[in-house]
Image (cartoon, rainbow, N blue to C red; front, top):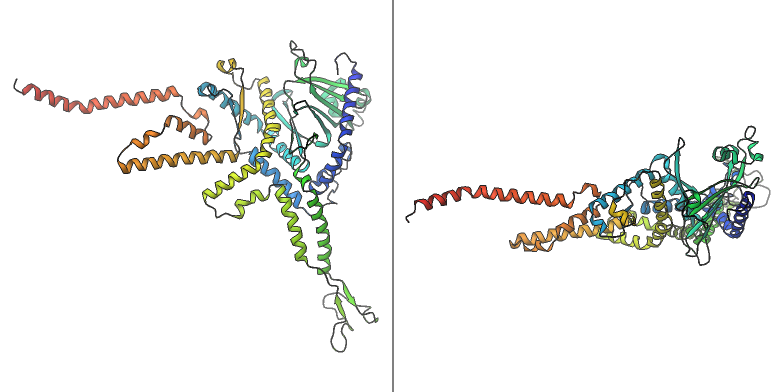
Length: 549
């Protein structure tokens, strides 16, 4: 899309491209709908509705769900992903300079420490909405294999004040990747009420929509938000034409451009659980075990019918007309129910074994729980009497099994999200001034993720260091020889242990202060040594004076 096109032509191009992207993924939407019916019922019918704003609100959507194992497993999957990737009560990443020599400078370490603190401060502010939205992303990954987050400025009383997060409904988002497989284009087709459109776009709203502002302000109209690389970027421009990404809002009604803008960083990171060659959208744990989910639902229906037959059995009676008025009421007397010999003339219809049915259902439940990582996190619960070594070994096993899933989310979702957050806070002037030495290095940084598993692995290394020091100290004490302690470089060990325990850099003193403290202690020791030696020196001098020459 070139800028010299007319307004209607640009709107037509956006609408046409959005329609193409929607048509290209019809198979995906039918697949997602099938998963939603059985795994995430609240999303059922939304993919088929086309415009989900017109779907019935609050209607029951559990008609295809007879067993809740998959739904519960999905929720636990999202909780497990959050606890391992983005725990709410922990610092789950650190920012460091890519040049390790720069990280030896205290001012650089302090700057990155402060920036990291500000990221978590604004990310977890109540009105930022990150905690709830990231959970929905993990739910979408578990159910549909793809999740997307919109990260933008938080507007408070007309001013940009922080960051705002919004989980994008997969049914309204379409995206494309560049030649390197990186998502760099997104189309979002979503409904807005007349009132919302006027609030955001003002006079740019088409007349056919604006005329409903008084009599029907809650009527929905479709809006398309296109975000794509700015192929005509003018580096000397300070407005959106000089930004790497272009943004355009289009009203489908009236085929009009509502707003144009730009972004310095891609604002809608998209993450996939696992992809198949040639496919844009991800495949989820729910898709992998969809046959097991369907089988479990079918088995549950059969078991429910069979259980009802056992509790309220089918009766078999001899057809002689005697039992026409047979009563099933408590305490009822049914004459003719037995013959003269006392043999019952009423029998129950034989039924199958529920035990076998339960075993079959448990087999399917185990497969589903394995796919959603539920059994992986039940290891410590099921075997609480483990030694510390066994617990650490299980933690390493978890890390090996979760590494592919966690690594993809860090590269596709969290990495671009942090880059976007830094861009927003920088433009809002909320970051501290960058040290000159870091400016000269062009501010290059890297993200180090501190997940609970990686922290546990570091903690094991720190514990091993402390054990070795303790053992060496015992050897030195037993041998009355301090030389075993000469093997340790405590100037390297102490900062390492501080990092293992996630101690903020600002809590540690600088190297210069450490040197001054050591010099002060040395001078104090030398002074004390002179004071202690004073009486002996005086005695020697006195003795020397009285001796014969």
